[in-house]
Amino acid sequence: MRFSRLAVFSAGLLAFANSPTTTAGVVELERVTLDEGNVTALLEVTSQFYVDAMRALIDERYRDDYRAIRWEALEDAMRDAPVARFEYRFTIDGVPGVRVYHAMGGLPLSSVAKSVFEGPTRPGTPETPSSPTESEDEQWQAGRRASSVDEVAVDLTDERFYTHFDDVNVRAPVLADDESVLDAFVVEGRWRAFDPEFKALRAIEKDLKSGTIPRGGSVYGTVSDIACTSCEYAMTRFGEIYEVDFRVAQVFPSLPRVAQSELIASGSARLKGNQLVDAISERPLLAADLLRGAREGQFRRSLSPRAMGRSFKGTPWARRSFQLNPARLPRLSESSSEDSPPSRPRVLRASTPDC
Image (cartoon, rainbow, N blue to C red; front, top):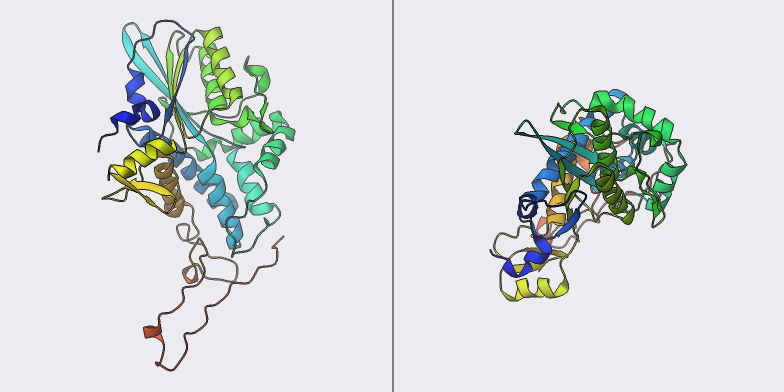
């Protein structure tokens, strides 16, 4: 399938990573919509680092069984947290080098797990799994109220759970404000110091100051969301101070309606529910949809109760699906006799809070 008319909306990372750099301090932000290039695959790798670390943390600290609503809150946190992958490319004595900084947005994993497994049971019942734990504004404002020193310390204790990083692929941790010339500010009610782009910037800055990486390089990044104005400003300021160019591909959640209509009219795509999929393979075409599905798969393979050998309180895991869909109505052919009405589906009642 060819999408030449949509190139302005969905150029892959490799398309601009090889273009020449003329002036230090340039910031180029590219929107990626269709799954072209390797943006989705790169971010999926970053996400897996954090999923594996969270599994190790839960194995160590939370061995009990918990209500289904808590596992759903964990899935929401791990699937929806934005991720970023920033490559710092440099040259030493004519030899090219690279150091890759991986970051996940939000508070440290220990703080996330504590909120999920030790905090109040979130609103909703097993019949409404999409109910949020709390509003995003409340989560980010809570992060802002928390002492940055405390969060830095918590993040440092999490280091032992990240066993897959090395000298080339590194984690961008939460760093103290006094170690950086970069300042985050509030955008749409959220303090942006915990955005993955901001974490990656501060990690690169720290390595530049320590001499771990040489100055004069360039950053080529991929982000699972659209950068906010705080992160855009931080990239601009970083480029000006350290003379570094930025070229960042951002995953945009949707296509313009006109572009989507053109794909459908051409017969190469169709809508499957709310997703735009390939007309033949039914594979999602949007990078955002593919990445979300990949991260859901990571959770099922590594963090679901079944994957971890757990069960729900009072209910064996095998008896219910994780998404807690309504019980299937039996077909008439499955009834004991033609005169017998179909049996009623079992209704899952709301559970009382476990804390």
